[in-house]
Length: 201
Image (cartoon, rainbow, N blue to C red; front, side, top):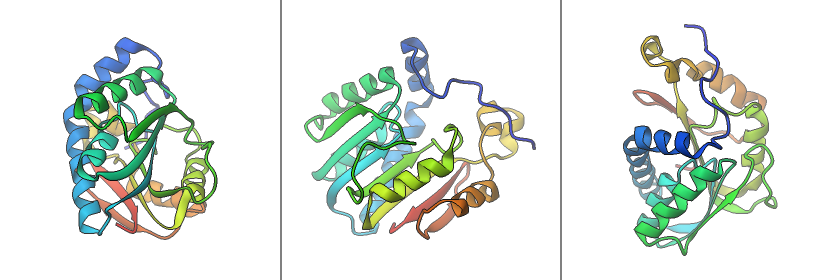
């Protein structure tokens, strides 16, 4: 199946569109957040500095903050309406004192080298214009022994019926891009609808 062009903007600047995106995807993203928490717990993670590079509407950093009291999370996105949704979720969950939501570009991270003990990046791989640049930035800001968790949609037969899957990468395509980057060696895996590339998890 040939890959299709994105049917939505790369940056969610329209408030109504962002709210609709949240309503359509909130439950699935929350499940992914709980999955991340479980994997982190199994890996021995207990806390530290965390970057969510491309946080969307903020559900995953909220789930991580709820599960790990000793984390301080910076969550970035270019879509202001999504960041506002994230701030609202964090306040409702009582973790807004440990999550900073701010405008930020995953292809040009405004942080020093070796800044974060954990960097997460979910459902961004197929959206950004320059994924190699994004991966190089993730590698740069992660500490030497830090954890990295990357998950994205996987292009599968569902793309015949659901266009978002047709815009995604195959596992082989994703691995080829990862191989062109500076990203350290990690563990790859496939889920039912997604692909993972994890370091230290």
